[in-house]
Amino acid sequence: MSTIWIVDDDRGVRLVLATALREAGHDVEEFEHADAVLQALDAGPPELLFTDVRMPGEDGLALLGRLRARLPELPIVVMSAYTDVASTAGAFRGGAHEYLSKPFDLDDAVALVARTLGTVPAQPVAPAAAGREARDNALVGSSPPMRELFRAIGRLAQAPVSVLITGETGTGKELVARALHRESPRASHPFVAINTAAIPADLLESELFGHEAGAFTGAQRRRPGRFEQADGGTLFLDEIGDMPAALQTRLLRVLAEGEFFRVGGRELIRVDVRVIAATHQDLEQRVAQGRFRADLLHRLDVVRLRLPPLRERAGDVPELAARFLEQAAARLGAAPRRVLPDALARLARHDWPGNVRELENLCWRLATLAPDMPVDARQVEALLRGATAATGSAGEAASWEDGLAAWVRTRLEAGAEGVHAQALERFEQAVFDAALAHTGGNRSEAAAKLGIGRNTLGRKLGPRGAE
Image (tube, rainbow, N blue to C red; front, side, top):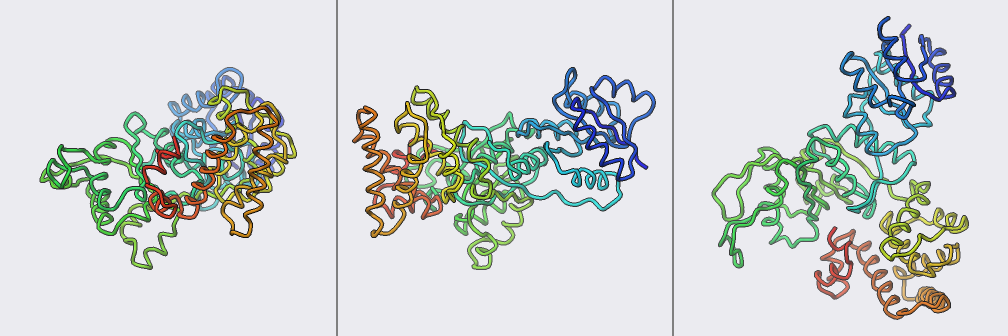
C-alpha cells in the first residue's frame, strides 16, 4: 500500500480522486492548502503527491518549489484547470513529475500513479499536437490535442534535443517552435526563423551560413548567417523538406559538429544552437525517393510533434475566432464583433482546409464586414462559399461572384466607404490564400504560378509575408 497526498481547495476534486486511488489500494490523505502539507511533513512524507496550482495562500507552483528543496526525489503531479503553455512549462521547470489538465480521466490518474510508483512499466511520453504561425499570439485552445501540446512543450522546452514539427500548412508550426524557445533555458538568446522553401537555392547557403566579402558577385561585405545570429538560442528551419541536397549535407555537419565555414571563408565558426525543424511533407517518403537524407532526418527527428489540422480540434474554433476578431478590432480601432450561436455552429462544421490561418483570414474579413452588427451564419456562409469557390473550377464561378456581390451589398447597406478598394484587397487575399494552399506554403512557387514576383506577393501579404 502506497501513501498518496492530494492538495486541492476543491473538495469535490479531492473526493473523486481520493476515492479512485483508495479503490486502487492506496492510502490517501487530503489537504486544502499548502501550509497543512508542510506541517504534515514533520510526521513523514508521502510516496507521491498531487497538488492543484491555484489555491488560497501559497499556490501549487510555490509548494512545488518548497517540496523540491526538502524532498528532491518525491514525485509530484501538478493539476490545473487553467491549462496554458506558461503554467505547464513552469510546472515541469519546477520539477513536476507530471501535469494533469482538469478535468482528467480518473483511470488515467490511477495508471499514472501505478507507473510512477513502479507497479507497471513506464510508457514513453507521446508526441503532441496543435497551433498557429503568429508572432504576437499565445497558443489558444482547450481541446484534448491542445492540452497534450502544452504538456509536450513543458517537457521538451528543457531538453536540449532537436525537434521535428510536422503538420499541414497553417497549423501553427512556427508558433510551437517559438513556445519551445520561450520556455527553454535559451529564452534570453535569439530565436531565428527561416523558411527554406521561400529562399532561392543559390542564396539559401549564404542565408544559413553567411559569407565573406567577395565570396560571390554582390558580396561586398562579410555577412553572418542565421546560424551565427542564433548562437546560444534557437534556429527554426521551416519547410525543411524542400532543402536542396547539397545543403542537407552541410546542415548535417553543423548538427553533428556544431561548426561550419562561411561561404568563401576559411575560418571555422563554432556555434551552440538548438535546431527545431518543421515540414508539411512526408519526410520518410522523400527519403525513399532519394530527395532527403536519411541520416539528416534521424538528426532532426529526435522528438517529433505532429500538429493536427483544425478540423480535428473543432472545439477550439470559438475561442480562436474570438481571439482573432478581438485582434482585428484592435487594429481597426473598433469594438470586437459579437458572434451569434448560429455563426459558431457554421464555423464548427467547416473542414478548414487552410487550418488556423484560414480561420484568422476569415475573422479579418468579418471584422471589416458591417462592424456594428453581430456575426451571423449568413455572413459566415457567404464568406466561406466565396473562399471555397476561389479554389474551385470555372464552372463554379457564379457562386464566388454571388458571394462577392452579397459582400459588397452588405457593406454598402451598412454605409461603408471605400468598398471598391476593400473588395480588391479581399479578392487578392483569397487568390493568394488559394495559391499558397496549392503550393503548400511555398511563396516562390505560388508567385510563379500567379504570374507575379515573389517580392510583390510578400508585400501584398503584409505582416504575413514576413513569416
